[in-house]
Image (cartoon, rainbow, N blue to C red; front, side):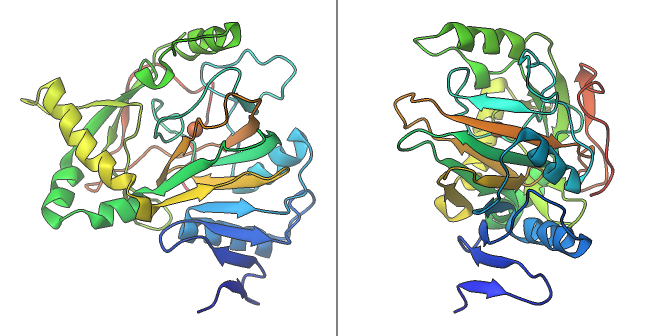
Length: 311
Ligand SMILES: [Fe+2]
């Protein structure tokens, strides 16, 4: 079995991290110019493996991370509502343990009409232990469903909102956490997305739900029943087979395809300082199996992200 593959076609030194998701790329400095062939190889690897861990990224500044993320397309601003980080570049969302812990399974910013297509994370401050990120392949999860459940999921739509318990207060709250939570819900966004999304590049079908998906838009189904159905699909996404557990090293950069993954930040580091800088790439409006597109019920997110049709 080949553990590390370096091919003339891609030039990437790439090692798979599991059968369904994840690859580690070594020896690739992302801080400077990248030739078009390398960029295409990275995009291809992302489509195939969904999450890429760059071990020797060489990126030391936000500007370098911006330049790298922009290889995938136009960038979003930091966040639709969390915009209070003065001094940070407008594209950078500091994911800071002093402000929030994302220990719920989610896809980034699905409460807007066109969530980011790609998320990039860079380790800035790491705890002495723990703080790993779990990332799940939602296409593999979809494929694991019995065909009868696939057909059901294909027809379902769910309402996503930032006014969810994703940001629910914990028992003990610091001032920075309160500030973050107030900003997070300062404007309400509600968007209806298909439960099964067709990836515009690969054609794969992936379950598209997560913590912001509050309930199914299904006549005759109660909130209680809706939660049960969503839980059934969500349980497939988080089966260990479809999940990679990424440990962080100083300077490491992780990129995941936000159209076909969910992730979870493990809260297992005794609240030691932990900061990752996130920069996201503007995405398309999700497309259902029947070709219909997502639609917004509340909130205009055009200040946050332009709509990118492909890429
Ligand atoms: Fe996230």
